[in-house]
Length: 172
Image (cartoon, helix red, strand yellow):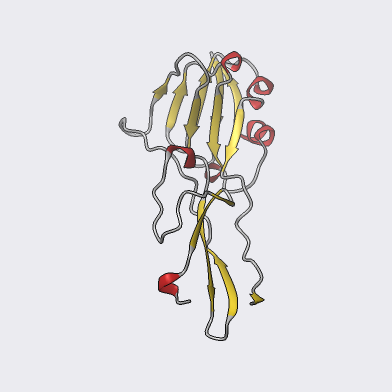
């Protein structure tokens, strides 16, 4: 089998998506918060089965349509997900009772941390809420949250997955 006819498997946060097997992949809303990689399998010139896995992309985020990345975000009734990757944003209604979530890109601190570590490292209680201010100068303020501990349970770190592994080759 040549590279031109190689089957592709697209990976969302390390798991096979099952949606695409061609050389291109169209992102969908469900991909937000994950890295995307591709795995290809083929037989080399000696008949040995080979599998290669690309490095995952940076975290997939929704681009803000508003100007400058300094936005005020307000959810609606029901569970909302607020994705924060850059800027100086204000979230007006992160509501635990409605199962709202704040998704933070791990690119903000250049490494692996738990939600608790993120809040302890970058969080501070400010007038009217809690602010997370990252070393890059990006910040998000969450109005109505009165303690750092109250925020921890509503944060998900996105792209906090292990990079895809390269699988060992085996003979056919």
